Amino acid sequence: MGQKNDMVKVILWDNDGLLVDTEELYFAATREVLSEVGVDLTLEKFIQVSLTRGQSALDVAAKQGLSREAIVGLREERNRRYANLLRKGVAILDGVKETLLQLVGKVAMGVVTGSRREHFRIMHQNSGLLHYFDHVLTREDYIRPKPDPDPYLTAVKRYGIGREQCLIVEDSERGLAAARAAGIPCLVVPNRLTQQGTFSGAYGVFRNIREVGDEVLSLLGRP
Image (cartoon, rainbow, N blue to C red; front, side, top):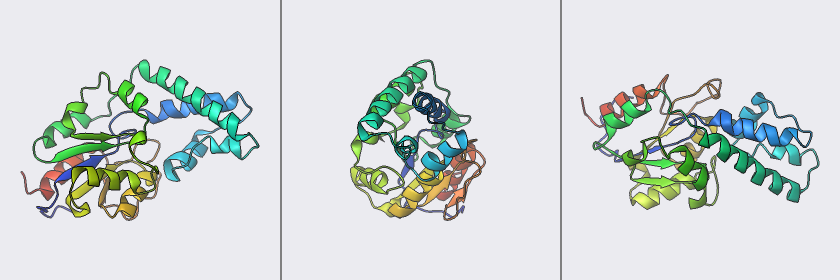
């Protein structure tokens, strides 16, 4: 880490759990709808299934015998409740605004998120963050979600650059796996839900997002 790299042109940021504090809201909405059909989703199980393996937490219900039609209904109800939680307000994580301000104009930046477009719009309605980014890819913009590399390969194609010209910033094992599968170096900033994860293969693991800003500037040869 810390060596100048003139090839870095784009930073691709994850969103949930990295820029905005939404993952516990998503867990709450999912747990609530599952409890109504007799399925207990613990936080530990949610972290294991969703944030580590990148699978839908609703798969827990499918394994207990619910039909595909029932799962579709649960997903629609979960998405509705999650949107309502987001409308009550979403916190920007500590250091995010300062870091984006530190980097804007020095390197292009985009968001690659697993959030649906509707949810992303709600959570950023008053965040003041979107003007820092050139592109935003939501779940509707690619075919296969993280940990598949498709989201990041789609972003690279949209920017019209090579993978060696990118860096990715993530917060979870699922996101790191997607970055590694895409062949793009990944900086990881674990949050309180992902801090016990294993991040072997990351370009660097940082305690807070401010360290990411300093690292990127170092790579760019900027003071």
